[in-house]
Image (cartoon, rainbow, N blue to C red; front, side, top):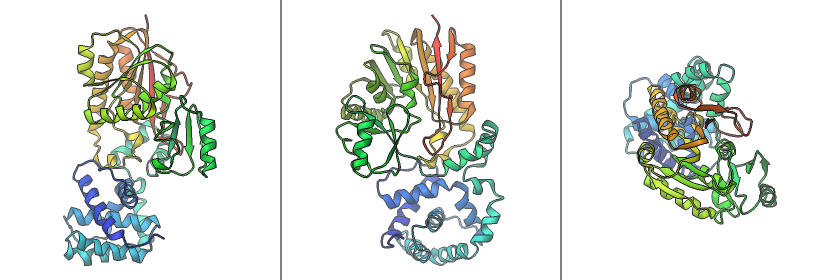
Amino acid sequence: MKASGALAPALRDAARLVARVGAGESLRETRRAALLDLTHGTLRRYGRVQAIVSALSSSDRADALVEALLWCSLYALESGRYAEYTVVDQAVKACGLLERWSAKGYVNALLRGFLRRRVSLERRLQNDLQARYQHPAWWIERLRADCPSQWESVLCHGNTAPPMCLRVNRRRTSAERYAARLAGLGMATRRLAGDALLLAQPVSFDELPGFAEGEVSVQDAGAQRAAACLDLAAGQRILDACAAPGGKSAHILESAAVDLIALDIDPARSARLAGNLERLGLRARIEVADVLQFASTWRGAPFERILADVPCSASGVARRHPDIKWLRRERDIARFASRQASFLDALWRLLAPGGKLLYATCSVFVQENDAVIDAFVARAVHAERVALPDAGASQWLPCAEHDGFYYALIEKKA
């Protein structure tokens, strides 16, 4: 059990962040461990904590901050990290820290009511799809249609803490040597494909030996497929569209001596990309521009490889960014698919004859993946979908080893 001293301030701060997400804002980054646990843990429980508050509340209270405090407190109760009496006591104290003094009795009564009625509530929640699977109803129904044999597994993994995977910089060391170095420090790993090492237990960046010196990066195993699936060779001209913060660009440069342009519309994220490449001892030309603008104004030589890591619903990485489940709407999927099609059309003009374009998303929805690619291949001149070089499936679904990613390789026939 954790000590209680800092729980009330952490509940206060978590409630403020979660309330902002409920109002439509993205979750702000935080490095405070207790706050990170409370916010992410609460947001992963999308419909569950809402359903519990609704079931136990005797009145329609419109105070979003108090509701968010209750959601965070319910997560804290169910996490097992704190004694039950501690959570109730600290939640009541958090009311005062939030200047919601009149809500103290309400918060106390609801949390104690949850503890008394937990078993009967659990039976009731099993009949509520959003509460049971902790995802929006539309998300659940879409997965049932797209992944009829695996939808429950996808939802289950979407509610867990994500794995931590490392990408060893092969220009500076090897996966074998780095794994042995970690083992000497008591950090167990498991070797995955290529340069990937899966940590048995997540650690902070500053605990990774050689991180500052560029020996290793943190990157999901699913994201590491991009470099392997681009069919790289030395000397190729490559465009990484939507490149920031640069994990895939860096892996490409670690894998082959190529001429790379890393393109992204966001100046701040592009600056992060530049910093990441500098740490790893890698060089690329960084362009800050919109994909459509870049494609319409490019006058240089065509590219032999293009990575189209397009904007998407991010449904495959929702456990890393649990606010996505609260913010995304079903209508967004069609909007993303339309934008993805526009990006493909624009980038196709920049691809050299005989070149290959790798389409990538971190989505698990067919409308953003196979449907986009099938329509593109049907309309684009000289476009042919070819097998992925790693011989893997196009769609990787979230599991204990990696997040959900989709890849499709398209060749421009000469």
